[in-house]
Image 1 (cartoon, rainbow, N blue to C red):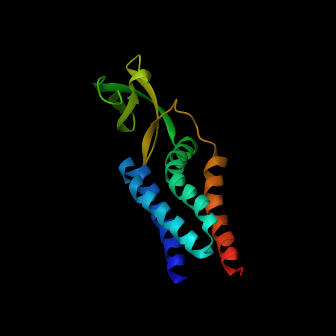
Image 2 (spheres, helix red, strand yellow):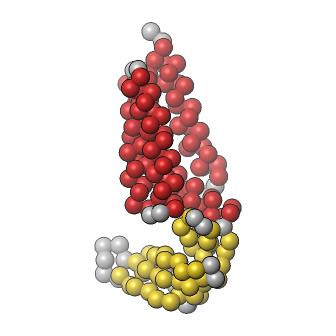
Image 3 (cartoon, rainbow, N blue to C red):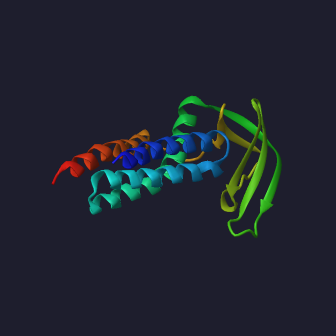
Length: 172
């Protein structure tokens, strides 16, 4: 039982650490959050000792890192960041890659920003609006805004699944 608690809370800690590192340093660190989500799912499954609880636990464990990564980043940037008018200083086009995209380097009043866009959504002019706010990575201002309800709903479901699993584990 102690191992299940350690997996559950260690998984949540790794999930938070991975999301925090991903929105401030690089998106590649979402792997840490994914491992944390899987550890959480294993811990919750061990707490309940019922097989059916594993499905929602693993769905939450696998989906939450990606929802929180993009959702928390978008919500934080649109609530705390500021929109700046930036000028494209260089662009690197990748039209024949597996996922065609354009990498931009933009000169903003607060400093340089590096962002990429899908090939079909590339900029038509050398001007763009970017949401910036240290220490978070910048975002395009026209990206879709995430609803705070989605972000808090997924987190709330993870929190509520732990006592449900514990109560199910106590039943004979």
